Length: 234
Image 1: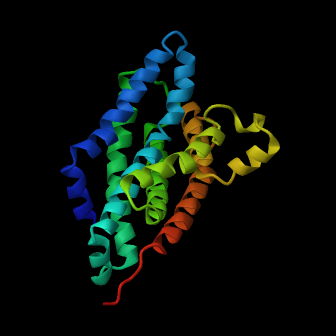
Image 2 (image 1 turned 30 degrees about the vertical axis):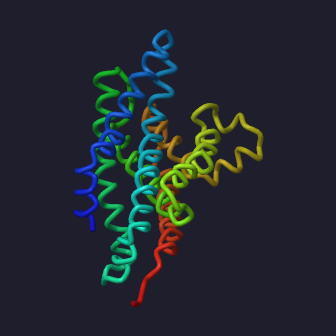
């Protein structure tokens, strides 16, 4: 299953561009938007390294899984001896490897070419990015069952991801928000992803708690997504 997904990615240049070129291009634009205020770039760009993987993997997974459903491929896979765990695990391993390459390439580009300074470890930054990507995969898998076209799948992005972006602390510290928004942000996985990324960038605090919470979200969302995969008996 993992090999099959990786081969599909390899032969899809648009997905490859979405994985590698788009984040690098956006980081470059951000660099020059804040060219006169480099400290803002340092603050925002580092956090975005935790956002890109989730958004990209959400888009890729929701559309790819929808194609599997509408083409009948998913039904054939569910008739086969392939289990739900193997199906989800195959996607997770394949996209985990893709996110590893993406996070390594984009973070290296931001650090060595654009001058992003991180006080912590780049390996820790990549680790957080992989967790974020898997969260995006899990959400994309879960919502794909509610869409009938690729356009409908993409429509879920502003409904699911934009509120997380607004409340994650990327734009404003969560502690400065009204209490009800701060409490609600604690229920969103992207909040912990942003917190972990900021800790790595500044090398202040441990990311253990944040990564454990992200892993818990991942397990819960993947479990919910597994219920959308209906085992056929014929």
